[in-house]
Image 1 (cartoon, rainbow, N blue to C red):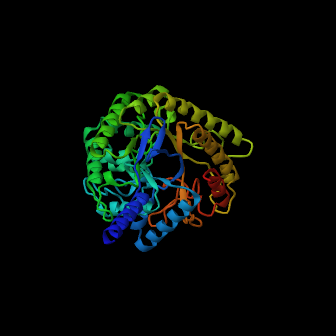
Image 2: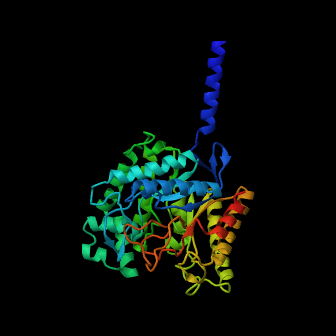
Image 3: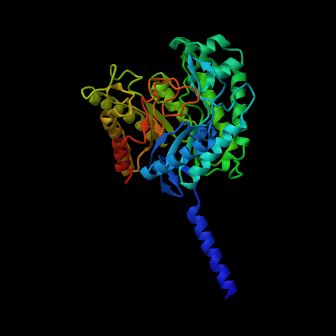
Length: 427
């Protein structure tokens, strides 16, 4: 009798463990799969998620994080795109960068920052949510490539801090791919991240089930045609390096799509054809790409939706040809009237979101290549500061990074009409 009772307890325990276990996301042809079953998702960008536990009041930050994860889970959201950490500190390209920083000074790492990411991943694991973690940035708001260039003598301090022209930014950023010491510094930060063990699970990130994928950077671009060979080589070498350190997780580039390869579809195809790149990503920014003038209106919205549909279909065809999944991992639209006020309408944004989610839904029905969507961006319980346009160090983090007006593209937890649409697609 005792033996039978012991056996029953063992069976019940193993059954509980199996039901609680979170499986790694895998890529099988044009699909993501979890434990052999297709994984199609609507997620969000939550780039600041790993920083919330590090705010001036850590308890308040953790409480906010837990509350927001519960909110997202209740809406059906189970995929979050998150920044691992920023580089450097202070002004860069005329704006305040995200702080605290993972590498505030050259070669000096802030271990506390990864403890904040540990907390996020632990809480996500409890809710069976998955994170896509981007490792650096083509753009200035988290330091990124410009900071590596500064540390290695390719960009002086004065130039780093002042506002660059678009041509200057392209010229300087493109130097990263031919700067051997810059790329070595990127790899040192990579090694630091992969050697870290979670203070909660005791695991290195390579064994963390809540991670879906690593992204080389946010929107890495060659920036200049002459840099393309070095750009392709960096993607190839870096993706292979990550795979050598982590056999469990997927790897992607973080590309905007053809707009991120200077409208070179062949280059976009080539970099996603690489064997260590598991899936394609695209970003869609109608405002930044001048698909409408000044502000979206009911008159120009259909034109924006049509261009978006065309952009998605163009990349879907490439994904099918490569037999890999595709994620629409950034897209956004300002509030009606280009307002930053949280009380303003989001009717046009809601219609725009719906058009993208419909493309995802049709793909899901057909077991197609459009596997996921991550809208930009979740702002949770944060609110724009009255009479203040841009983020300042010490403010609550929101969906809009420091260089953008706070409230521009953020979806707040109070945007009921938007959440109603999202939930309708996740029933």
